[in-house]
Image 1 (tube, rainbow over the protein chains, first blue to last red):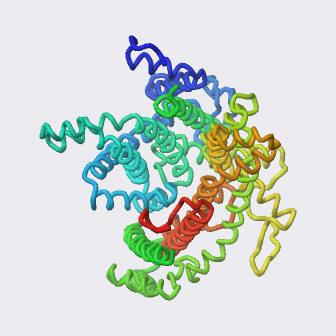
Image 2 (tube, each protein chain N blue to C red):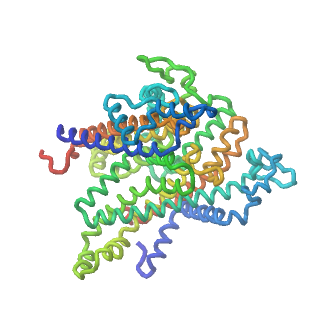
Image 3 (cartoon, helix red, strand yellow):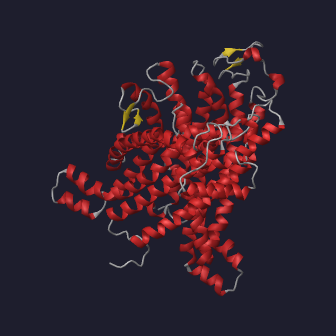
Length: 294
Length: 327
């Protein structure tokens, strides 16, 4: 283990940098997020401004030139939309939905998990029974049915993703909070007669965070994949707000006639996003897992 | 054991009724199926007649009560679209889904456990790292996109495999099966591989992690020290001990394979229950949606129960029915 003079943050960085693959993943992830954030600035075209689209340029192969002489590096879709710009904007929506749903699910799961662990008794039984029942069904099934009922929309898909994800956090937080609750600092806080909310959120919560960070990172990737899958099935986002999944779905009908690029490149973007997150998450898990500490 | 089984059964029934109510409430809220079923030119009288014929004019709780009474006697309502019992519609499609899920699971197990063993025994070798890299890739690739790439390569570019349907089927005990004919196998190959990929990656990771822990244990060191051949140490001592969590996960994943078949079936137009569900959602065929869920939930409950029982038989340390069980 590294000597004690450096701070925890520096050691964390050094540990993380041990895996070159993880560093590559992090660099890729930062690049992808930047592209998503800057999509309106760096896209060659605003893919949703119909005035900029030319139907004569539809379904051009990658690298072909359009009517106005510009080159479409990744080709165009059936509306004559530049795929590269479509992917940039799609990344924005996919990342936004993935991160937003993770943040909400994390907040809800955190509160329920902490409350269940701190109070125990019937509160614990009730919360964990709901969690168990929910986790015994695949997330995709629950999300599918919810969306069939709710309909399409960014807000609706976030609701569906939060509903299927909160239980993972609740379970993770509860198990680490159960361990932490037994420790002396919690007892000391109780003896000092601090308020229960203060003990739960100021004392228990910060000590339960490390495993939660790992779960949350993995879940962002899951959320993005799930959203793409649901949108592909036609149950996620409306066509006016195309995520990567919807772009892929849109290109599916042209796949059999050999126009692969409409589906293929958004899929590559999706894959790179999910993979970079998974690489970072894997390394975080190793660093934050005390059992693997050298 | 018996007390445990009875308690489990009671809980399961409760979950089923609860699910049916939630789904019924939910499905009740989506659109008006009459709009889709009746000819757009039909007049108001015709609409009302159709609404009454489907029982949609009655109060919600009465509709649910009629449904529950029917469900208790095995009648889950009639499909609005096909006008046949929803349950028989699903049972008709179920063999296709189960065949697909089963073949996918066999592929995942047959490849996942050996690959995981190799990766666990030699974690730092090139092969071990390669297997792990492949498994990370398998985790990251969204199922539906892999399906598209498979179609792109094997159907469009190479023209080797058909991209949709079940192909020729041979009938076994009255149930059509694809894996018994050459044409059926060709149709089955891509969907099964597609569905297997995620589970394969999962099994590789699980086996690798178990192996890495097991080889450090004293009993393995002792078996080696005794001079047992490598094959026996791994085949008997290592494998037997890592098999327990693997069997559990395989059992639990069986349900999720059936759920994920929804995606694979949609891509490859495989005529199973998953495709039926998506079609029914689009056509607002309420009874079929509700019936599908009840059938799937029942299936899950049965699978989970069987896995729990198997688990307790495989691992004598596990006692069903709580910690207080006596010896």
